[in-house]
Image (tube, rainbow, N blue to C red; front, side, top):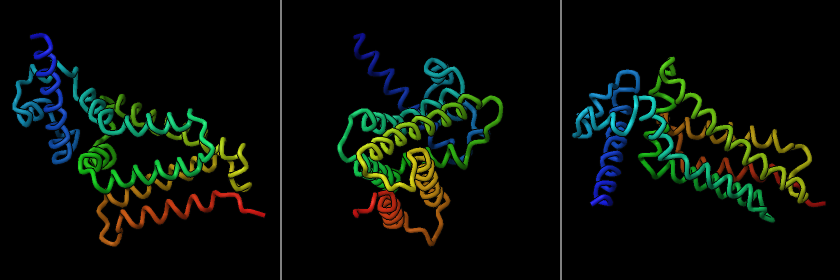
Length: 207
């Protein structure tokens, strides 16, 4: 019985997060109340409060559910000690771009956090969470670039820090392009081409 209750609670939590994604995307975060989320999820306001203290916590859980797996993957790559760190990082980036192109939920959540969320005072935790996410990924990629340098694979004009910052800027720009739905921006092939060219520029040329 206890297991069934736990399963039902998890289903309710997921339904609330699904509803929050839909309403946040349609109305924006600031204009969305917990009542609206409860109505969209088909639950009571009390059920929402049983799982989440406030709207900020709903946002944080929504982000965590979608983006944490990729953050963890980068950290595991950085800790693994691969002999081909540039290839590993490139494939990770290509995989992330593929998910953004094919996973509607990922695109919607990214759009909510970048284009549909006003970072006012009561959303400070969301700002902190987003900054922490970007910093974790920056640190992990810098570790991989540092390993590439130790292995003699990184071009001398690139430092690990410079490469990590440039990669983050490139990925952010590509994602913003698809979120803004630019008509001239064919995300999947253009993103792949940009990533391939960037990593080619990082490789130390053979003498």
